[in-house]
Image (cartoon, rainbow, N blue to C red):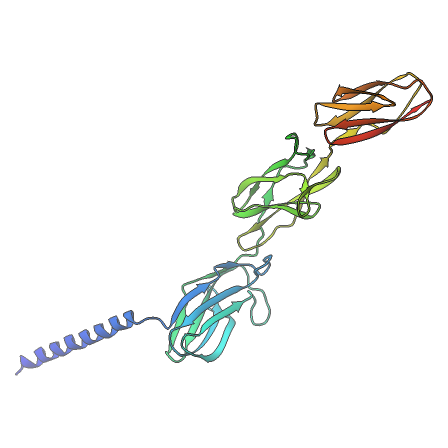
Length: 309
């Protein structure tokens, strides 16, 4: 009898262990009441377009739940959903703007969404952390620069290129007179920005003049750095050194011409010719008076007033 009792106890313990194992394994195989979880991994309260994080999921069963955001210490910082009953199959989209319930912006860091299922007596910390990053990227370019452009499609000085470097993965942005002309597709830390001398929609070659160029960057959290002016681009197609010349009859005079074309055509009181680009040399008309000297380079032209006295 003394041997039977210990044997019975051992058998009972083994049976209890087996039952506990079956129950535990069954709990492991049981599907979570929450499915289809999708959480915004990164955002900024200062983002250009998206300034909130979304916590989305679907309920497999009818549940009464509440949800909140907790910080790295496990403290609750913002309630996302007050206790409420939702039907089976309900799809929830809970939104957090990065602020506490009292309206204070949470600092940069990692936060966890938590869902408490009151009916199932379960609290689930979703395995999808949310990171707040409000620090804008820093982009670096050579400066100051004074590029010369002539965007007329002749292949000479049609565009301007500047290399850049960013301290983190981000888009490079180039703006001309405050209007964005390039937003890089990739978020590489090094690259090049280009301007083809065109603005508007559809893009058209700009008029001659000076144009202020600025650079900035936008990171994955959509933090955008402040535009930094780094270049003044001079756009010219055909420029004359002066627009008025005073000369005696049959006197010689010179006129400086700046253009990408290797040669230019000229006309002055019935006479015409072709000269190499640079300093042009002329002889004034015999008669006293005011005349127009026309200079043409490709599709561009300019004029200079010649006063013979």
